[in-house]
Length: 335
Image (cartoon, rainbow, N blue to C red):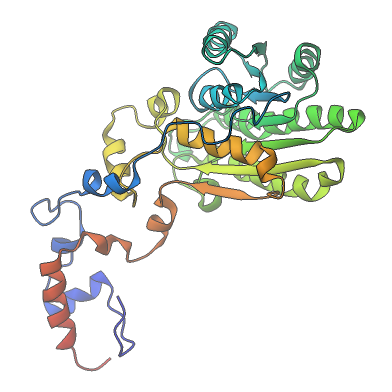
């Protein structure tokens, strides 16, 4: 809060007025502040229909890691509905096959299931060979495979660190490298997309392996946007904020309490939806986005900027409290 005098009043300076700041600015005082998440979210209702025109991916091949569940399944569904021949990959063959059959029956387009452990370069190579065999060289590659859990850093073992970084960073590198080499040999372009997170930019406590690995994925994609565009390849990244999926939330919010806190701090007042990120992913991988390259798109309902702003918690102050604060501030003399 800045006035014309140039003086700056942070919440903690209110102690000088004998006005306890915690009475105004903490979530703990429910009498003074009630969450308006539901109220403000009405302005930001999600659209679940497919955004792009029909057949936008007709004749194209899409390869999606982690495609059997969650965000991967959602992105595959949209791409398939737009005409793409999709190949989904993960370690769990039974889940993959069930998802492939479900999406195929829904969209009428073939979805192939290929088992792949992205942590193993040899298995990635075999999966890419199978991809090319059943569907051809891909036009779209979405690196969505991930792993994460919350833990204090001092509780982690070397194996815990390795399990996350092998999947997220090394896995993305192995898939990108293997497919990229095949595309270069075939003289074929493609659109690569990686799914990271908003804390890849800022870092975050209690998910240090994930933050470190996701940051590496972003730098790799930006670097390849500069290096491999000469081969007709584009590289972009989506940083999702909180989007509720069973796999992620069961490991990051096992009690469900953190979800309430997330919604309270989201300027849009709600969590994101799988359909929304699927639409964004489809656009970035489509020919409509052929000039978007090396971009990192924050997709978080405003969460990052809210957490970054030092005084953003002042949104909790009521009109009556602002009237009182203004009176106190106007009475202030000196520096």
